[in-house]
Length: 340
Ligand code: NAD
Ligand code: WQD
Image (tube, rainbow, N blue to C red; front, side, top):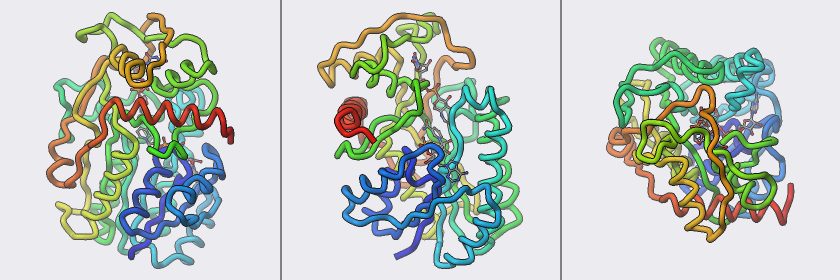
């Protein structure tokens, strides 16, 4: 049974991936500094899978600590690297925090695990900006980043491409996520946004539960059927399973070269107003919303071409919008009655 290091494993996507790795028979070691997550997530993971994952708390920007960790864990055969700062708006206010955290942690891992290793990197559809053609394929041109956060993902992909080119022992799969939403079906783990959520679905659930006021729809004058912006929303459990598929592909030696990129989405676009309607019809709740101005930096529409991940990774999103909304709502209610 191979051992996988999950950095950022107490975070939103990391915690769901720890569960799916366990379900697929992997041993998991988590490293997280808890800068954007809660230690109680370990209890929650244990409640789902029946065992407590091994956990180490330290900052991956600390080169000495990462080196010592790598020396003490020579049995690790794969790394899924989630740990990063991810708030787009904050990255504009504090670019150095983003360049420091997202690059130092990545580089320290690559320097320290200088042996045969399978590496999955959390990239983002943000690297495409507004694509010229939709659905966007992995070969589409990467656009000038809209934010320091987006820039860290573009440059991290370059760091990995260039490093893989001269490091035959390093196998890399970069997964470009579209918009992850939803929570585990047990409602024991989910997204824990910091402060007022910038993302649509956490704002919807917090508004529905009375923690926030009405939702503002950022723009209804886009060139889309209902005027609101379109995204490819993907259930976090489907996304988590894509990481297991990526590790399996590298372990089986099926990868085409030692650096690959895959889009991870459903391939289907939904507008902001469609998401609001899906939440209402799935949960029976009525949402209050108003139309506001476009949000600066937002793109009009994006959804992924997922043919490559469907065929080569053997992975396909299975959960629909109803399950995304239902699970997000169950998690919001759970966290209200069981605050961390
Ligand atoms: P998250 O903030 O919930 O999880 C990240 C985890 O990493 C947190 O638990 C945090 O404490 C930890 N961490 C951050 N810096 C660290 C450091 N220096 N050392 C150790 N631990 C550190 O975020 P998430 O939504 O689960 O995102 C995971 C990854 O996926 C990130 O790389 C993010 O950029 C990427 N991503 C997220 C989305 C999204 O919408 N959530 C979309 C595309 C890509
Ligand atoms: C979705 C849609 C908003 C909130 C961001 C990052 C991206 C990626 C995922 C990591 C947009 C609209 C939102 C609200 C609204 N993260 N909206 N009212 O902007 O696609 O992507 O998160 O890599 O990098 O930029 O996601 O959830 O913020 O917005 O109308 O209160 O909902 O304008 O059209 P986005 P989002």
